[in-house]
Image 1 (tube, rainbow, N blue to C red):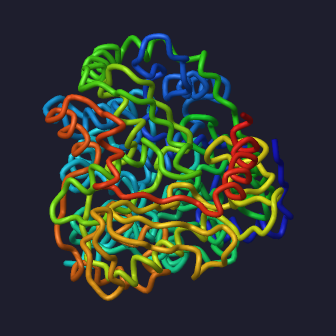
Image 2 (cartoon, rainbow, N blue to C red):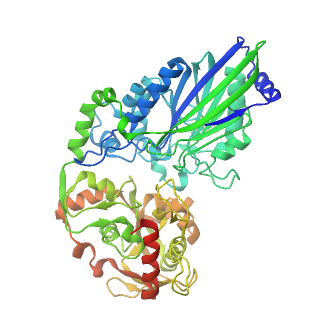
Image 3 (tube, rainbow, N blue to C red):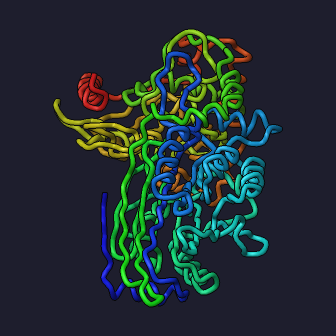
Amino acid sequence: MKYHLLPLAAALLLSAACGRTLKDGEYTLTVLSTNDVHSTWFDSTYVPGKAIRRSLFAVNTYVDSVRTADGAGNVLLIDVGDCLQGDNAAYYYNYIDTVTPHLFPRLLNYMKYDAVVWGNHDVETGHKVYDRVNRELTKYGIPFLAGNAIRDDNGKPYFPAYKMVKRAGLKVAILGYENANIKAWLGEELWSGMHFDPIVSRVQQDVDAIRAKERPDVVIVGVHSGTGEGDGSVLESEGLDVFNLVKNVDFVLCSHDHRPYVESRDTTALMNSGSHCRYLAHGKLHLTVEKGKIARKSIETELIPIDAQKADPDMRAFFQKDYEAVKAFTLQEVGILNTELRTRDAYTGMSDYLNLIHTLGLGCPPAEISIAAPLTYNGYVKPGPILYNDLFTIYPFENQLFIIRLSGEEIQRYLEASYDHWIQTISKPGEHVLKIAQRDDARTQQDGWSFVGRSYNFDSAAGICYTVDVTKPRGSRVQIEKMADGTPFDPARTYNVAMTSYRASGGGGLLQETGVDTDAIEERIAARYPEYRNILYDYLMENGSIDPEVIGNPAVIGSWKFVPEKLAQDALKADMALLFKR
């Protein structure tokens, strides 16, 4: 547990800023927070024989124990976003059963959450879903908070900017902010009617205005933004920027990067609980008031590891009917898989997994080329009957399929940019060809060695035949030989390229590196299709099975490989052994 005692002068200044007279005595406020739960609501993955996982059920056990120890009237519980995506349960209540009251608001009401911040994957569900969820949350007094999601028509926040609560005898203001980089990831139809201001440019003026208007004793700022480095360089990671720059704030709660982190410094504490209910962020604010002013202040922060086995049995029983409904939906058989799918195979060359994704893209007219990356770091689906549940492993996100127009020269530059995030130039055996480092990665829960970049940005292409020379530098690695059907590839010609809506909107930065203005991407869009997972479902309904010879047909998807083959494959084998200990 980290503990920080404020200098008396700083405490007195904070009291003056507060502008409200408190009764003399000791005050202790407990702040608990979750973030990036990604709908790990149930403690079961629905499939018989699978291990119990961490869940909101287990989080509730710890929350209840803290409330019992500290007094429920002294505890705040806040979520910092990315709630409505990631698991079958969210998908079911987002898109399948839209008549029953949505499960997420009911869960938060049961757990007595005080506030929830809007996350980028919540935006991804679209107006129809998040507007409905907000209405149902509001009935319970738990609205989404997003003070920087600004309506285009009147300049006001689309969702509430803050909420006032009373805890531990203190007036508490809870402010919430959405990630400012939404435009770079999601098509405008998902967030139409608003825009997103950078957090740091708004939060201080909001804090000052709320302190003047509401005269709170405590201010908590929740940002669905990564911890970052605190240097102001990354728009999607402004957590430490807020922590370093904003005054008269007691707690900053950040999220988004799945990086468990706590720190106390000066007048503020920073907490990020990581993701997927691995931890519960736990902070305590102690105030001593003398003669109506804050004389002393101390802050404690820690991360409480969540034990998956300690799921609240009463909560499980309360939501059992919901669980059974989701389970019945996700255990339905949707086809046959006649090969195994391992997402990690995509790091070393062509794979059945990415062949399937490319086949889906190329099956959507007028696509001629497909660009895609492995979106599950180390997912596996075994051969045999495919359950709807398996579709979430194959394609975990609600990304739409866009077809955009790119010139052959732009495709060449795009692939050069992609592989430069993925591999490095080598000249002799024993060198690392994958861009890996000896470090743990909290996001992927990888120990020992991990990728320097994010594997969901390792795009390869299909519909063409090409090689990637690991002995060459960026700009001369990728040699495109021909189209999959044998016709010449023309750098001057315009091609229709299938890719995710995330990528087409600028996610990952690869189009920007290519020189494509993603702010004007509408001018390049040739067609839009539903989410990839829905396209996969339709493929199974039409074909009944996934067969390696069909999805791997070179006349359709083409081919690619790393060269020189022996040097590249020996290096890849060694690097994969470090990453996956095999």
